[in-house]
Image 1 (cartoon, rainbow, N blue to C red):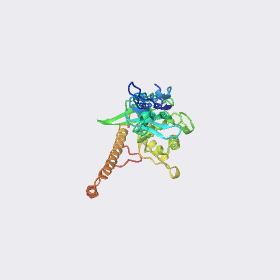
Image 2 (cartoon, rainbow, N blue to C red; image 1 turned 90 degrees about the vertical axis):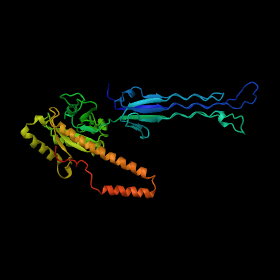
Image 3 (cartoon, rainbow, N blue to C red; image 1 turned 45 degrees about the horizontal axis):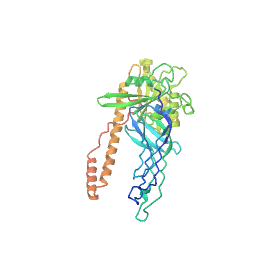
Image 4 (cartoon, rainbow, N blue to C red; image 1 turned 120 degrees about the vertical axis):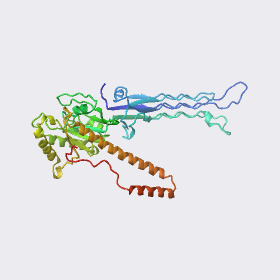
Length: 397
């Protein structure tokens, strides 16, 4: 199955059925009165996130979705039948935007999340709606309301905790195959990876995180070189980027420092927020360097990459690994898991504070002041440990 992460579709909801003018006509009932029913509601179009899907290939060939119209009303106080809704299913992580306005219509990040794309038109009123003590024989009705019509852009952004970033043949696919059950294509030529791959890394009982591997970037990707930067959208939801660098490139004229800086520039061109995400440096293929030369080679690379003055580049953490021999992979995975657990704990604490503030909004002022004072007193008992600060500049503990 082809990996399709972008699609353009057109959705048209059904029109509401028209109401009718009708009068009750039965033997021996000369003045039966109005009995024209309302029209039925037109069909709506909904979208639902499904974790069993992983591409938008279903919307590559079928691009128009049109719901049926509601039935018109009938006599004898009969309302028209409402039309059935249309359900579209997309992978979790799909964003849907209105192509005309650019408005974000839906961001489906959870399995089963359901959103309305186009609302069906309401049915028109029959003349039964207009009867009154002064208008006993109304002869008016209304047509049904038209259904909504939209042109939509579907964009899949995979949900992952960690994203792998680097040049082609930097060893991203080898690394994700070494630390997870993912089995991407691996070969000795550039651009082996043509679509994102996801892998689940397990570091202990009930401890795991998801890694995303995207096709390699090259300098000039923002201008369309190589595969361009269209796959960078899959890193926008990640919490951490691992920047893989090949310390032993095939090309003897290649400079790993220059290539690493080029990747960072491409990130900034695509999305400054993506470039500002936490990014750890992972120096790969150390198995190709003699053991006695590794430390000197790594220190020289980090010093040159960090730079000085305007060319200075902050480096949060540095890891030296070999995806082929698995050397250094376990400390890297443990450090990543520790970092992610710290972020999740902070987010859980922030959510608890928000819930507390929301609950206290309904508490009388006197009780609220007592609870707040008690929480402040608990906070003075001493600082809570948070697991340590981020290790910087080459500490591979």
